[in-house]
Image (cartoon, helix red, strand yellow):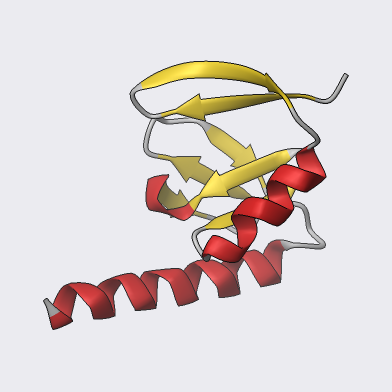
Length: 91
């Protein structure tokens, strides 16, 4: 059906007709969106904590991390946090 559900911090969920891979290709280059497992995109700004196999979001949702993507996700999240902290110090 190509229906994507978007959970937004102050609203939603919203459902829209879209192809997940097209949405992923559009958002991942932003640097703060990552796909930890098939069919899920995560906004790093809303991550509360990570473990080896899951991500806990600020709203309490726990999302799985595929074993295949675990190392890349943690690397991307560390890079995101570093850039975020660096920009906060420069201000």
